[in-house]
Length: 59
Image 1 (tube, one colour):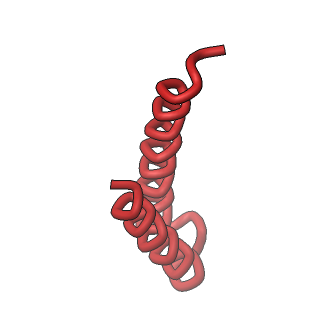
Image 2 (tube, rainbow, N blue to C red):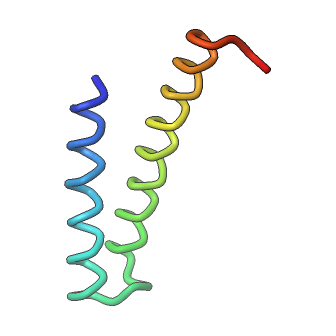
């Protein structure tokens, strides 16, 4: 699961960078891709947070 999520995150990140260069940082496409990258990063971090809580317990 993590590899799939990381691969998707990297692909969206590369598309976002390309869009930013070609269309500008404030373009609709670039901003949409940025939001998608944010959601994927949040999903990844949330998954790892809960994994660490399960492994080590809450502080």
